[in-house]
Structure formats: C-alpha cells, structure tokens
Image 1 (cartoon, rainbow, N blue to C red):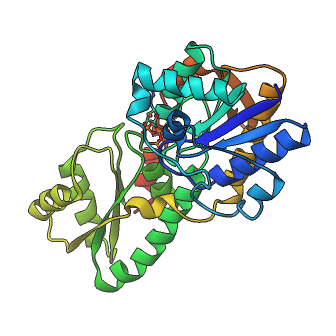
Image 2 (image 1 turned 180 degrees about the vertical axis):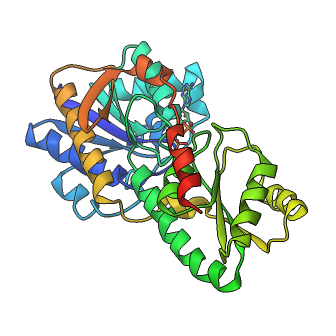
Length: 320
Ligand code: ATP
C-alpha cells in the first residue's frame, strides 16, 4: 500500500499521540503517504482528512489526548454512515486505515473490514478491557494517575482518621481498580467481576480501625452497580466510620503517557504500518507477554477480558 489513514476513536487515552507519531514516521520512512482522519469515525464520514508530514507529529510524544481529536459517532453505527465513510476513503485514494481505540472502535473497524476495507486495530483505551492483548494504550498512565491521587488522599484521610471511597474508571472492567488497589494499598476493592458483600467490607474496615489503623481506603470501579453515595450510605449504616467520597472521573484520562504506554503505542503503531505496507490487514495488533502479536479483528473483538482475580486475596492479606 502507498497511501494509508489513521484515526483515534472512543475515549482519548494517554499514548494515542505516541501511536500517531510512530505510525506517521514509520509510513514516511517507507515513502508511504499517511492521512490523519480527525474526530474518529465522525471525521471519516465528514471527509475531515489532513496530510501528515514529519513535522506534524513533532513535540507530541509526551502529550496526553490526541492531536487528531476523537469522538463517539452515532452515524457510524448505521449502514448509511459506514457507506459514506467508505466512499470518502475511496475518493481520497486511501487504501487502508489504522484505528486506535477501544472495543467499540474495534467493532466499528470489524464492520469496515467485513465490507472490504483494509483495517488494522491498535488498542487505545485506559480501560484495559480488551482480552486479546495484555495491555491497552493509556491504561498504565491511568493507573499511575490513580496512584498519585491515592497518595494525596492518604495525607488528608490519615490526618483526619477517615475512610475514603474512591471511584475510578474502567467501564465494565475492574483492572484500574484492581491494580491501583493492590499497588496503592487499598483496604477493599469493588470490581464488576465480583459480587459486592457490604457486610464483609464493613466488618473488615471496622476490624482495621479497632486494630489501630487511622484511615482506610476503598476503591470502587465505575462499572460496579452501586453509586459512591449509595455505598457510603450502606457503610454508614453498618459502621461508625467518618466516610468521604471522591470520584476521579476524567482526571484519569489526561496527563503525559508513561514510558510503558509510549512503548506499547510505538510498537503497535509501527507494526500496524508494516502490516499495511505488506498488504496484510483485518488484524488487531497487541502484546502478549511482551511480544507484539496480531490477531484477526473478529476474533480479537470476541475475546472477553478475564480479571486477575488471584490478586484479591493478596489485597486482603496486605492491607491489614
Ligand atoms: P473507550 O474504551 O475509551 O470507551 P471505545 O472505542 O470502546 O473506547 P465506544 O464509544 O464504545 O468507545 O466506540 C467508539 C465508536 O465506535 C462509537 O462511537 C461508534 O462510532 C463506533 N462503534 C461502536 N460499536 C460499533 C458497532 N457495533 N458497529 C459500528 N460502529 C461501532
């Protein structure tokens, strides 16, 4: 292929810029043309395209967000929208595209692939909810952002001898809560993959305080079917603790990507361009045990992420 496109779609994730940079510079190195498609599938439908040169990706490696912008596109969910998108690709002579996004964006990419568009997916989402790859671009930065927040919360909760309930992102995946919980020393974590036992949680918190702990932290993933306010109300009924709630929300999506996210973005975007260059497509690129892998898009979309539940007993063991 000689002319390819790249778009970022779904929620923004730190490292998307590193992926754009790697894709653009790999393509230009091989004398391929690369077109930036703005605002994800919306831009594909609107024909919002711009040529990318070496300078266009200068000084973006360390920045969060995405210089190509991102969006969620209702129109792309329809056949009409997808046909319009394909029409624009053809008009512009774009022979294949790289889609950097989460599982929704991959479902969109699989639709395009089924209709004959050469597509490669690279995993860009903080949620880490894609089962075919060990990690997604942005996840490591998000966990580190949560850890920074936990450190700051600890200062005040220990001074006031309080309990904090911290809600983190992740949609239906508990990975951010689980990993930030273990590495941030949480006393309890609530993730969508496990049933919630409020009595057990309350007893654990009370026991800790009785043993002399002067503060405690509960991390709740956003996908758990109880709001932070409801959780506080239920724990208020069962304990005598002074409980506060914090919802981190979009703060977790920003910030300069960690080395690990930049590496993942760089390796997967580079591989995506190499595949298109060799006329190989219809794949999702990711990493498994540190190795860059490719898997048919349809298969990748179908693999559900399994939570690392073996870590739960460790959280209980270490938070005493
Ligand atoms: P994040 O994990 O950050 O939320 P995501 O890629 O999962 O990212 P979604 O909002 O689920 O984010 O999907 C992004 C876009 O992908 C949607 O707005 C829509 O345009 C497209 N999309 C999602 N599902 C489909 C589908 N089944 N068919 C076609 N397009 C889809």
